[in-house]
Length: 190
Image (spheres, rainbow, N blue to C red):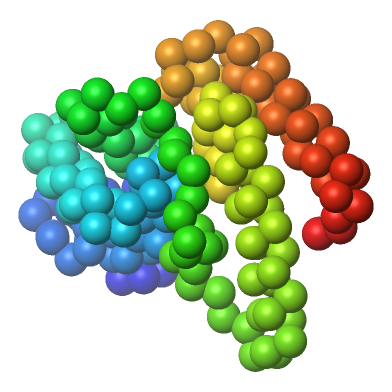
């Protein structure tokens, strides 16, 4: 069943096959969990929101509230993002994407690499990127994460962050400029 397209799996799930949704969840679980973790910076909270996300996904699929536009994973990440925002609103926190803690955000991604030296270099590079991202204003950091990690288009980012496309583009531009400036100041190469 793994050779089926996303649309075929969704149709099978709609026709009563729960295994089809399980395959889709497995296919996207790392990307979705990491997107949540990048926003909340707390593994336990991310796990709770991850579970809540899939409860909402299942409910919405059962109620036929998903319109297939070929962007199933983006739809799920939008649900997760909204749950993160809801969490921060409930806790009256103004930060939607918080600074990272001592753990590397990239540790949540399964990286398979046979060359141990290459893995060490990659982790060091990820650590440098994480530290630089932490120094960006929240709005810039959010757009960079959504664009480069979650593969959202600028139109999707604008809709998700409730801004205009030009604002999303501007935040990306200034965020990348700020990253380059910091890298130059620190004479860093990734």
